[in-house]
Image (tube, rainbow, N blue to C red; front, side, top):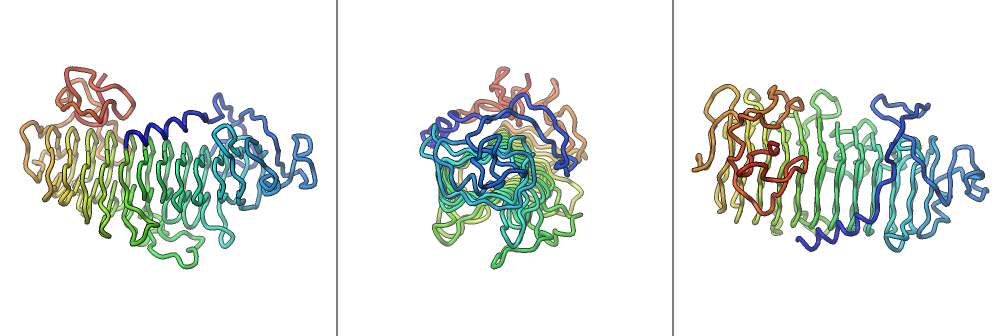
Length: 466
């Protein structure tokens, strides 16, 4: 697993996202109150403008009118710059780049300034950056679709109101990176990956709905309202924010099972079970009564194994992490914070692990979970150095029962309101979590990247006290 992860970062570090030192720009395209348009300086090989003409040469002073025209003539190593405007087109990109130095890059000149219906990527080494995307059925149903390619990069886009998902990286795509996108109010899910060796980092997914007002794609089944659906191996899922999915106050949600991350093994090679994957530094907050953090099924005979789930904050109502059915082994759950609601009718258990072989469950904080803070049945592994606390003073129920180095006490966060998405889980200087954890070779820093330990031992929870 380590070799694959190192290889992934070697390729990703060669490409840096353009757009630092951005300046806000007001235009008529700024329709959404929470979306800003940012200036950035980019030199392109081809330009697209609403006022252009597809018979032009595609230069800055003689731009094309459509993105499709620019894509039809682009070659490896070239950059397409799309100027601010509304482009009522869904663009299929069949031509790909040939290497990191010969990518095909399609930029919105200003982040969120160019609005279109979406993209389908069928070539290798293609980057889509900075677009405001809203798909429109029946022309298209997904914002960005990556079909079986290598080294796609999807970054800085605002993808919203797509009826069958925001971003779909599928058909065994490899080395894709999905970075810093805002994905809002899409149907079914924000990001799906049926792929290998991918990076998903810094994205914000919110307000996913079960039955989108635009309808369902023909033949679609299994309506839900998830954050991510993940298949395949050797992924890194880090620093993402998933909030308010399956909102019960939205009429588009009838009876969703809202999972921040859902994974399962399908009954064919098209949906391989998640393996050899790191999930770290994410913030998940779901308030629907059925809302879960990470839910995994492995019931078609393919084992889920070698997962590291570390330094996450998971606010949920039903289950924080569930290995629901099937074979699981080598699962590490460390230095996370789990929060439920004591007075809610949902189950509210931080983790429900069934017959997991070689699990490691250490250095976690569980808060206001009921009827038990954890339920680990069968299997074998290491369980210790956790903190459990109920804010109403009741005694947390633990299964298995309290271990030798576990603590039942208030962890003393900087701020704990008891309400989802309104807590500060940093530790006060008097917290019993400080220097109370155990050292782990596969957890070397915290939620914010601070090195562990800062004191004589690891702190328990997602944050290391500085």
